[in-house]
Length: 285
Image (cartoon, rainbow, N blue to C red; front, side):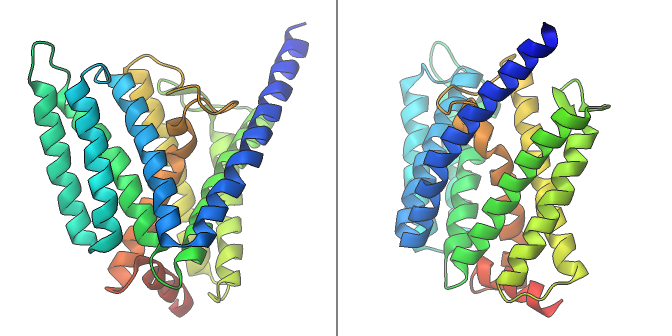
């Protein structure tokens, strides 16, 4: 009976995941195809939902000054990230996080400035990384590279972990994640990323495979980081907006980390655009 129930729950969860993916993936790819401004709009909406879920998690959602201050920071940050340089966006995010954390410390019922500020940085990092990666002629391909690695890693980890089981990856933080799932996700994510690079005129190479593996590891790490935050505040899901996945933060945790790593590699490689720098580096190695 227990096995039948587990099988039923698994099949139900998979149906919900597939339905959610059928709606969300075309929406994201469509905005990505339309251009930098349309994609920035989707990124901002996602970041605002992540910000909302984070503040609910840490207890700052009921403080209107904190909530609206955080929203305004993310909106202003999007404008800065689209129109100005990466250093300007980073500076704006740091200043905004300090300001909102200071507001959180005030009032009759203060909430943790550290956790509120961390949430502003977390949601803002997603804005900066994704918008920076979309800039320039290589932006579409670079973002597709990150999206496919994050989605493939997460999906493969889910299936392999459920199928093979075995030792837990980090039981105290995430009791359901296994080493088999993490390794399966890493291998599939790295291979997917290397294949995408080959389609983007970056010849197949060990360096490209390593870079894709690094991004896949970042995706797994981002998932664990969010799990640790949820465990700190004793919640299972960040929200319930996406059927089969929980909240928005539950869905984009790995993507945020993967995009950050890719953006940083590209920014170090080129002063022009992060996407161009990343793909150029992969083509040279």
